Image (cartoon, rainbow, N blue to C red; front, side, top):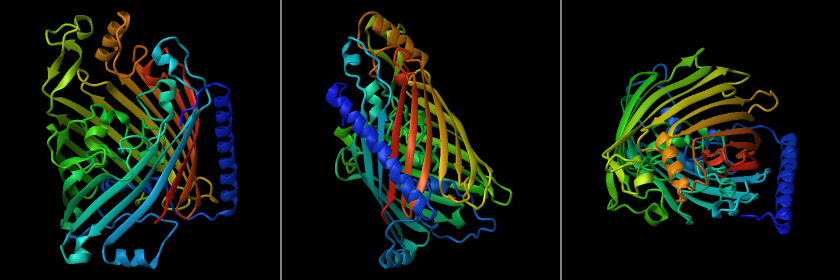
Amino acid sequence: MWYDRNASSARSIRMSFCLYISCLSLLCMLVWVSPAIAQVMDRDIGSAPSLLVSKPLPRHASHKTSVPPFSQPEAIVTTSLSKWLRKWGINFLLDSTNEFAGAITPPTRGSTPGFRNYRQGASNAGQYAMQLDVDWEKLAGVRGFATHMVMIGRYGTTANRMFGDWLNHASEVYGGGGNVAVHLVYVYGEETLFGGRLVIAAGRMSEISDFAASPLFCNFQNGSFCGRPKGITDTNFAAGYPAATWGFRVRGRPARSIYVQTGLYPIEDGIYQVYQHRTGFKFNGANIIGYAVPVETAWEPMFMDGALPGHYKIGAQLFSTPQRDNYFDINGAPYAVSGRAQKQHGASWSTWVMLDQRLLQYHTKDTGLTALAGAIYNDPHTSLRNYLVYAALLNRGYFRSRPYDTMGVAFTYTKIAQGVSASESALLERGAVAPNHATGIQRSAMVLELNYAVHVMSGVIFTPVFEYYIHPNAQANLRNAALLGLRVHIQLM
């Protein structure tokens, strides 16, 4: 819901803020009376593929062909039926995530239509999700074969657009879900051979759930970081959750702590648009316009006898579909000046380096201080985000009495491609409309998030959030924006 800054709007904002304070008060009461039972935010539905790739082989792994264990997060409801289903290889999960965010700073004012639409207000966005994994080895005797499916529904809106930002959502669960009751995210089959040394998968897949992925990213709420650093899907041709395309992926582990993987993913035009993928059930492939080929390798050491795990990965992807140049026209002149059609490139690319390392371990196996850092560099001639760098710290279980609470701080810096900035400058000078919803020249943006994830009870996490946008939409002419938020994750079963 959007709120205008008139008298009625001001009352609504105050009510939202009071609701936020009330939730925090309730949260504190629950923390005081509730025992801690293990659950962390990076175990929600959608993280299963990245959780699997983040696990190196056991120390004395066999060569037996078998299905790896499915993710089984703690839940509010644990029934004898679910235990019986898992015994036969059927893993059914159901969860809900709700994200509230409200601006505590006023937006930039101006006389142009873009500025007149800016508001100070609050928003709410949410997602409910279902995951179904089937171990066909247990169910039908098919050695090493499993199938995976996720379906979601999404609702609400995001607060960042109220103050003019279109680069990084304040609520990551907003968008991409089709605005329908049921949206198919992915469904695919996976064969695990030789004790996990070779894994082959095919079907409707989210490429960025396997490549440039980490289950740690969604310990944060803002979209520049969760569910992947935003620069990796800059072209809209890389299939990131909750979007999917037909795909094929193969992963090999030549050593216990090293993997190499690649794949082939058809590029579907309009993958994030409602007109093509409203429900996710459009399978005919009539809108395929090219192919994406990612390659990634990683080293996954386990220092101090496994107490300090780390992940160090490097990767790249090639897009074979034509893309427009962000500066030159078909004759090699600035398109923003000439008015002619933009130059077409036959292909483009993206690269990334990502790492995370636990630096300290506290009282138990899953506690400690973990550092994350990385960089994404895109083709400067076709991209909007030329590069993005990020850094974060996750401090889990620092307080002995709260071993499953997590404190987090994350920072991202986004640099807009030079051609985009130059083109917008020329367009705005002659009074034309700039791309990317820009009301000024886009150059760089920064997003900071601080949060504290409180494990309230089995299957329930409340996370108060503070977000700060520096140069929203990468525009220096927009005021910085501060937001307070609350994220609630409930694992139902």
